[in-house]
Length: 295
Image (cartoon, rainbow, N blue to C red; front, side, top):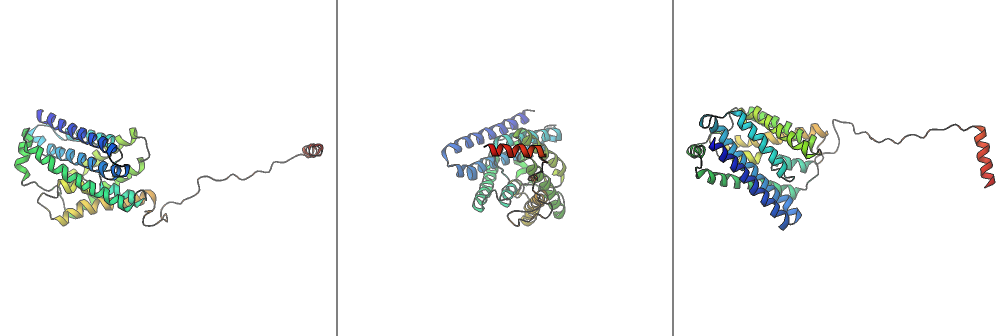
């Protein structure tokens, strides 16, 4: 239990550090630099560091600490609740940034900067977390250091099935994001966290359930068991395919590529009411004529 407490303290420290970084960056950088670079960099660092520590607990916790999937899933849900509340609008996910580009909410340059910041944040988190593990504050970390040199791939199925699983997870995740993007945070954040938890529970035995190319690149690309091409097919092509299908299904088109809606009819919701002819009696006509004459 002491090892779990230290991991929870690590989660809290990472969130606090990134929150301070966002607070300072918002005050010293121009608005565009903060939104495109600093915010995405800090949020990507936060997500990757927390997910690396959580993955370590998932791997070693059941036989090293005696706790099962219920603990790891609860932690995952709570972590994404905190992510949603603290990210300040950042996505920390390349597929979400590309989705913003495709729906014309982001320019090409802004999207490229966000993608670079996300991959940089994930890479920095991997280096910092690895250094943190080397301190061996718990038995979990000591075991992690012993197996880190020969880590196994998160892909536990064929490449084609892995692509299907990641694409399916990305599809449902993107639909949730699109459906609740305009909702109040008090509804959007827990629903998104719950969706991530359910998808992770369903797909983790097959691919690790990343549906985030940058996160997968930092967590599993360095492990043996699959080639770089196989990793890219599963963890890049799969999520991107799921995102494109979800966007097309939700909107009926992809605005950056074509404007015509191929699924839904776009009818005018606001119709101008037609004027109604009100019958006027002869007496009313004579009164109106008399009033007009008197004026």
